Image (cartoon, rainbow, N blue to C red; front, side, top):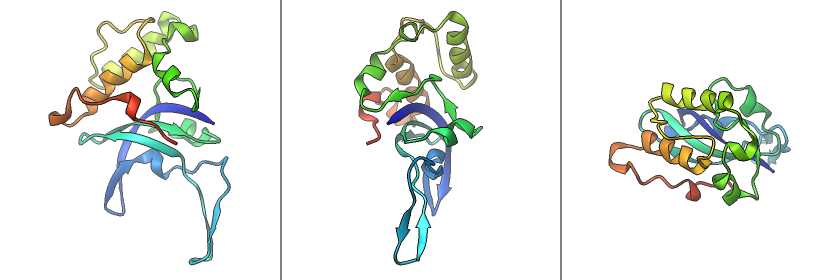
Length: 157
């Protein structure tokens, strides 16, 4: 099943703060019939997230069809690349160079991150995606939790 790392806004749904991706329907999964309400309920994407007090969430999202993530203007696909959800550790160890990125593609990502207050000093084509995620997690963390984000513990199953 494909997966990707995204940044999206935090919304309030039923009094609960959660990432916007939690409300997006996965068109590749069939709806389930709810006997109690006699209606079909759409299945949403599976995700794991780090939700910040600043109104943004860093999410690892998995689904059968990621089209609704791609089409939502509020969802930023961090690496512009879908990964196999079964290759969790390999995703973090991947570098932009491994994916044949050029400096222009790297600059697109670092510019987007810089525009959102993330220090990109020292991030290169040879930096692992885990290094990029550590930077994001640190900026999006609540003040008392800086330096504690661990992308290896953020997985959708």
